[in-house]
Image 1: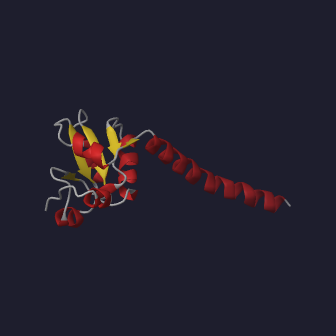
Image 2: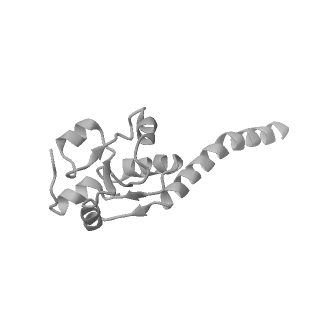
Image 3: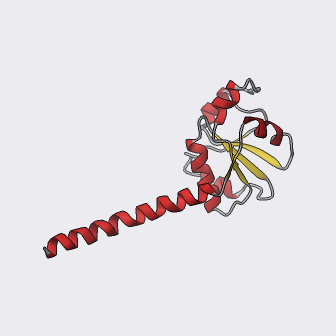
Length: 135
């Protein structure tokens, strides 16, 4: 009986931090406003806004939203490169369908960025809407 109790306690100690971490990440992302294709199209025209494409460099070169900046969220140096971004700007993150942009939003929020928007529909929705793509 005592061994079972110890195993349950040990299991909780191993699982709980991961659950808290996932909850914190979800909470950080919930603070980020979602934007749609038309909003992105209007916002990208302002110099204070930056479309931040968080896909790989290869994907970016194959086609991206005109004027977008590439910062691969899977790059081991993502955090260091993000730290050099101008914090006075608003960053509109996107990828293809939203998974990597959500991850980028979490990382940017954790780094103290407050002006972040998530275009979670991503490049796929952009292209489907007939918006321009730059290569």
